[in-house]
Length: 85
Image 1 (tube, rainbow, N blue to C red):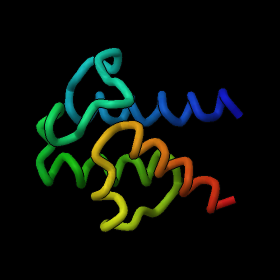
Image 2 (spheres, rainbow, N blue to C red):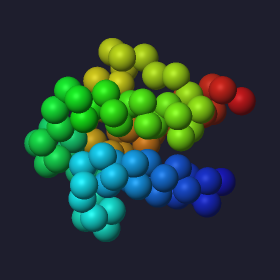
Image 3 (cartoon, rainbow, N blue to C red):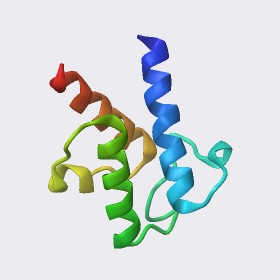
């Protein structure tokens, strides 16, 4: 299970790094989308679409907007994947 958690985190950080053009090694669990990565609406839309495609999940807009950090987003993805099983 630990490997799966790390895999989800790793894959999500790769998506974030790609969209925000940042070295994946600079991303931490505490990295904030707006304050640290200067996320704009278009970035968030791209991030949501890429995440949904990569993990095969559908997200709720209101719930997704509550994810302010990478850790919160990863936890949300894990929650959605668990519900999908």
